[in-house]
Amino acid sequence: MIKKIDNITILHIIRFLSSLYFYHQVITLYFQARGLTYVQINSLWAVIVGTQALAEVPTGIVADKIGRKVSIIIALGLQFLGEFIFIFADSYLLFVLVCVIAGIGFSFLSGCFEAMMYDTLKAQNRQNDMQKVAGLNGSFALAATMAGSVIGGFITAGLELSNFVMAIILTAFFVFLSFLASFLLKELSGEYKRSGDSSLKLLKDGVNLIKANQSLRRIILLSLLATPFINYLLNFYPPYFVEAKVSGYFFGATLAIASLLGFFASKYAYLFEKLFGVTKGVMLAVLLPGIFYFLMSVISHSILSIVLVIFAFGSMHIQKPIFLDYLNRHIESKNRATVLSLINVISGFYVAVMGLLIGFVADISLKHSFVLMGTLIAVGALYIKIDESHVSANNN
Image (cartoon, rainbow, N blue to C red; front, top):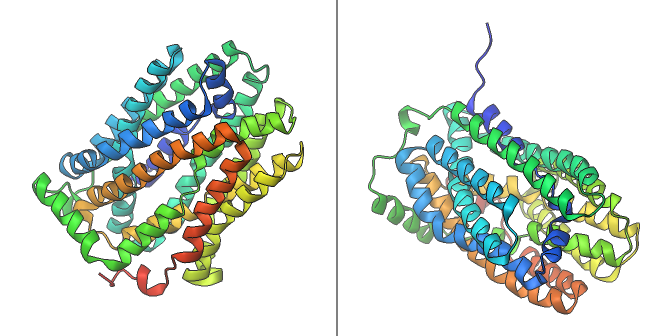
């Protein structure tokens, strides 16, 4: 008899398929070939996170009202639509349209994906495994990035426009497969079924929770300032490699190796708390990407540049499983997606605004943009501290 796969397994499959991108290693060069500046390139990601921020609360409420499964299906459907349009996009305005669609799709996914994960574990009395499971889920995304980078590296090695388009088509195909896989999810029942509260009450309860819970606010603030700007690193490392005279064949290989490191960093992120305690473990997890940004600002070498990008990208995946666990400990199941979406609104606006500033600085000097990102991360790591009392589920 074949054992049915549970939600956690399906969520891992979805994460892998929807993260299987074959063009990330050359995306900036592709945009530059279309005539975009660094400000315009970073503005596209700002459009994504800005749209996501605006749509976070409505989609989070929808997830709590109609169920997480339907929300995930909608999210992946929109992601596929965005990738399909991206195949034919050849102007800045069309790229903006793709980013708006992607932002709405990501907003449907961001709150309810982790909410379904945590509530599934809670239903199985395994909520203490959230760091491990979230880390493993992140590892599947990084495994996909690694595979996509290796395959995409060969597809786009010639750095020609036709190669870029082929990589986008292949990406759209696997996103479509993730969309089909989402129909296999099971909506949770009993205590964990979709909320019967009104949308306004879900929103008010979420706002009141953040206002009343000082520990939750502190964790949110640190996670905000700790943002490692992963997508901006993906934007900047190809031109950084060009300046360092790195061969085009190493663009994909570097991202693949970096993703492999990130795979293990995400999977074993929970060990940071066990080895160093909450305060030191979180500070180290937050500070590491900032250190590598500072090093990238002063080192431009064909080999050392590759090493720095690998360790910078890999270290950025330590903190997310930790913060996801700490945040979820303070949130009830009935409006978990709504509260997580409220948090993502704050984060989205911050990343969008900083992205424009970082892009403006990069147009002046790429190395100065690395200094700026490293400084922002260091401020969060050194000035916002959390300890055992802040992450306790009973400290509400």
